[in-house]
Image (cartoon, rainbow, N blue to C red; front, side):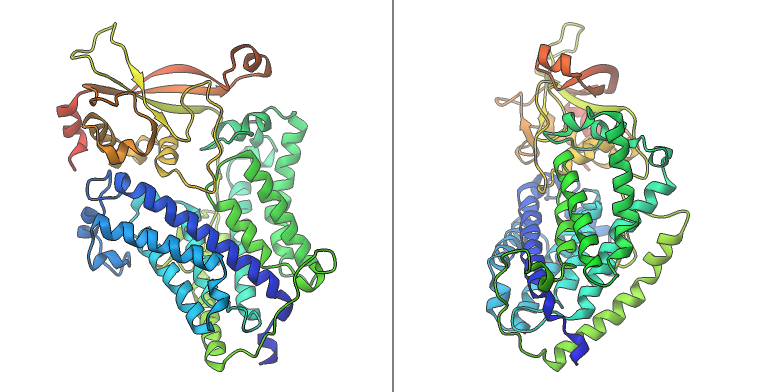
Length: 483
């Protein structure tokens, strides 16, 4: 079928597939390095306990067949190895059917992890990776031209991602409409990055310009993705520039990078080659009939499954980051419908003293990414995802959100659990676990230019009180540490 092929997008497909493979690699590596403390047999929210109360049809996963920490690690590291091979070009070096099987394996391994990941995997970029990964199975390899229908489905995904985020903002916090949200957001976002302090101190007119540019990138540019070329490529370029701005200003795991990769799939290679030194395309043979049939079936499936996400876009009660099927094939997206004006952080402290008195000396646990020591500059971790750090940001905003795992976290600190301690940057009790731990709630704000020069501190913090009063091992077990 002549209309089936879009040969001008051969390089766009190449860039998209290699970029997606790198993101898969990051996702699997992050899982492999963090799962034991979060989801392992002795983790904060153990997978075996979750599997006992969830049916396969509600959360499809290979782990319904059998679970062990060793098997979970094998799945994660196998996914990382396969993703690295695909990033190096394996998908283009094998026949089409083998390439499709490799992409299917990556998607199946990731969906198996996400569907048992519970609250640790409840972020929009998890489902975004799954949806993009499923479409990639049908995108083909270097032996045949990219299928036009799959390229359009990728644009539909990018449209829902960006347009949904824009609508959530317009329907949400008033500060998005009066252009003041970025007076606060760079300071109160979940995981500030190394440049967030500087972005926060931009003049107010530039903050307003940031909001206006964001509205254009999320409400106008997505519509133009479906316009004829070169308009669609320009719209994709606007999305890419906006996402790079977000990469510089914060840490949002692989959300921004995956959005950039999706936008690359919109670029018309034949036009881009006029200004960029792109390699010459290889020989693209005709697509097999069985492959064309699969692409048509995929398109019909996505059209049917798009009904509820499309209806959600038009709803005044728009959901953010929701899935409507257990395989996360077609989802809805959105972020920061409301902006917090003040930043609150939970600081966990411990002591080895046998009794708590007014003179007790407390020492702080330090997390890898979230703010703690005021003199520590916010680090860069994205596209890597620090799951515990992200959930610690939610805890002071919504205590119920932290109830399932915060008690077990304190218990693991009191027992000196090595897998949980590996999730932290600094353990102040390397020899033996503390006898008491507590959690204190602080108000954090970025220092001014003058304060930074005078003190060397990036943050100033004010104690607001105890979030969890001092607790010993027996009491922590009673709070849910043994669940």
